[in-house]
Amino acid sequence: MSANKPTLAVALIVKNEAKNLQACLETVKGWVDEIVVLDSGSSDDTEAVARSYTDKFFVNADWPGFGPQRRLAQSYVESDYILWLDADERVTPELKASILAVLATPKPDTIYSIARLSWVFGRYIRHCGWYPDRVNRLYPTKLTQYNDDLVHEKVEISEDMAVKPLEGDLLHFTYNDLNHYLVKSAGYAKAWAEQREKRGKRSSISQGLLHAFGCFFKMYVVKAGFLDGKQGFLLSILSAHSTFVKYADLWIRTSTEPPKS
Image 1: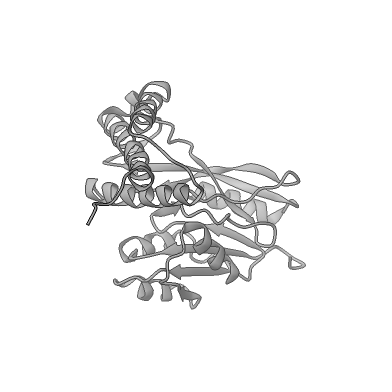
Image 2: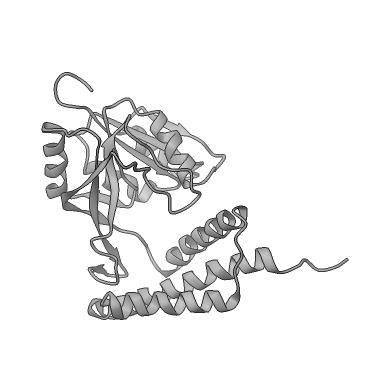
């Protein structure tokens, strides 16, 4: 690290995020030292928006999965600390203050978790198991990195590392509409099934139904999704559907045969 206050980079992996990217980067403009954007082959104005904030714009259109793409993006970071954001997220003033406090008095071998507050179908979701939805997003660049999972990737944490929570929320505007939800959900299900198939895992329709029911019950009843009104009910139903789809996809991949010629 530098002799004075550690430097801070914001890193993002993006694709076709022209509508979201400016609002995201506006929340970090002026107080971070570096912005790194790794694009996976956008066909909209994502590059133009990104280059209005940084000259560290890179492209890797040969999509390797979320984990490997994040690892590649981190390889371009030169700052002492890295803060990971998605284009549909916004740093609140309270979170900014917490991050700056960390840089003022940095602690060794420490990763910082951030609470995400998601806006879904016209409402901030504070139940359903969705809040505080802590994610490990801030850490010294040389300390660790994401694993290479294709989806639901996580920051690698060893026993000698500490994880501490930051104050303040990261606002998450996760879905534009129902179609956007379904498209994203299908992509995650496909990646999940591919990853499990490569690991030799199998599934069944009954397994999918069981996990789907468990998902709904946990979100709507155990995690009090009913307190989020109609949005909580809808989100619980959709999450159960997504859960079933990923197990069904794995079953089709591993337990069915193509038509005979």
